[in-house]
Image 1: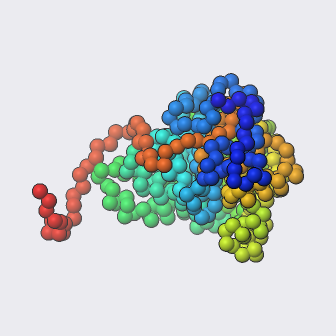
Image 2: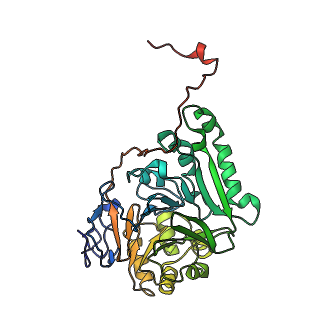
Image 3: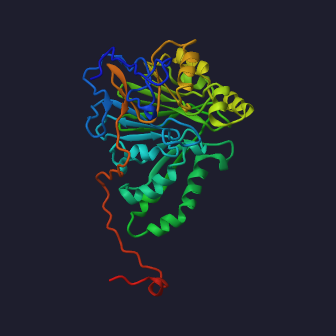
Length: 391
């Protein structure tokens, strides 16, 4: 069981690396020297086992579905953060839905039917790539109770905003939707988008005791935001993609239990690991992303109970490099998140672990609350002559 002072170091092939090895290299623990902040009121298993641990009333459980980059690997899906809320409804909210993140969601044994609230930080493909799968494919495997509700920022012109994006996704799914009519509840293959002004810091969602506040961030193009979620005296902030920026610091006023902030490796390390030219890597870092030192500066200003890094290219070379640079300006608790890093947040403590999951687990449908009777569709007339008869 995890307790205060839980031993974190693991042996790795790189003896100079004091942190736990990443999961793809055989590690089993969160990449941090401080997996627990505070004194938990209950014991937590060393690894989070989906389906075996109840979410308590008043608790938040935050799981990184995608810790990675625009390119998807078997170890890192693109950006996505899941929040399970310990309210009566046991609400599920997801912040960004990058490619590969839904495979990680399925491995958590959570109801597909409850995954219908998505908050986008911006419209880069690595933050919304799995939205087509959620709307189109997951309606076929249990997400049956109605539309996907989507929140996202406006742009500097209508075509760059979330509303236009959602309409375009609907058009792109026109064949899928028509082909599924009859067996599938047509309401479950729709997107209902709520677009808000990216320039303002304001509450964009308020229901069942959960408040979500959006705030502008500095990334690539005007129209990127971060989010703060508040519930029952607990708070979680997600930066999305951004340079170190003041609106996030101001939105974090009053205390934050968990802040997950993006962090790119130094340009030379990014270029070496990704194949980008040093010029491209330098522009990517300086124009749109946060260096380890800059992330540490943000953490020192916000002073969260626990901090997390995401959007990092994970390797045994890059992880200690980022940690070393960040530690020049910040000495608080930090977790280098990877896919399926799990944070349990209560008033007493914040606990970070890795989930232990099955790689071949089908989606869990959950219990529908909306009745729908499937209808056998009428086949096209030409099929009668072209189908091969089978006894």
